Image (cartoon, rainbow, N blue to C red; front, side, top):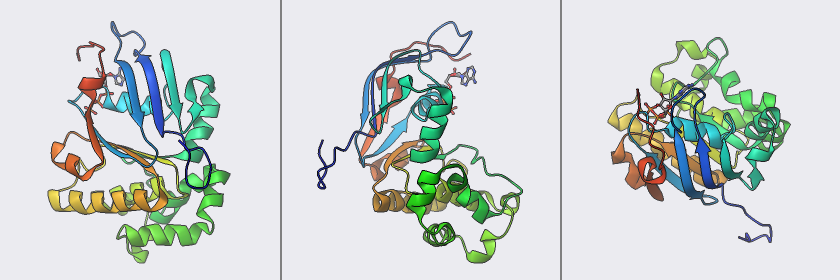
Length: 238
Ligand SMILES: Nc1ncnc2c1ncn2[C@@H]1O[C@H](COP(=O)(O)OP(=O)(O)OP(=O)(O)O)[C@@H](O)[C@H]1O
């Protein structure tokens, strides 16, 4: 695919014949023949508990390494990279919103948001003025300035969720991966959070891979996929 400026734009994710089994497990957890997330696409991925959603996100994010197949993320062959190269790639190009947020409790909300820039000169360069980028994202995500100075541990769950989203978005990563980021919110807060996340991804042109059990959210996305339709592995959850 060739983008308007003449540069080649790769799919955010392209995988074929991807297999992964947890060490010691009797059967593979994932066996996916084919899956693509287009550049700029916002995809809703759902599936029952234990179906392998978090495992797939960990493979795409380079936290885990597949046992077989091909996995290109933003045009980079993740299976050709070492663990530390995958860590660098993730820090530079992927914004992760984890199920449990993974904020550093004693750091302020602002320092949590700025954290990816401390680990990635690429993200810092794209963010420009990091303090201004933190303030801009916090504003978009409805996090007041006085709250930014408080340690993450003192924030409500909904506030922590929005800090986690701002941290994922700072420095305009090309791919945002969100693992059940709305599960702790009530319906009204879920809808508001989703509006903000979808808008922010659109404004920086990021692709979004969003995992949830909650099928009511699916209509907000460009596309919805069931992992059980993609995955032919037959592991039975213990
Ligand atoms: N660290 C691990 N070691 C061994 N097995 C694991 C590990 N993490 C997950 N699994 C197994 O892999 C399978 C898929 O788990 P995974 O967390 O990917 O599912 P999920 O669809 O994200 O579930 P949930 O919706 O409950 O978060 C499960 O059978 C689980 O027991």
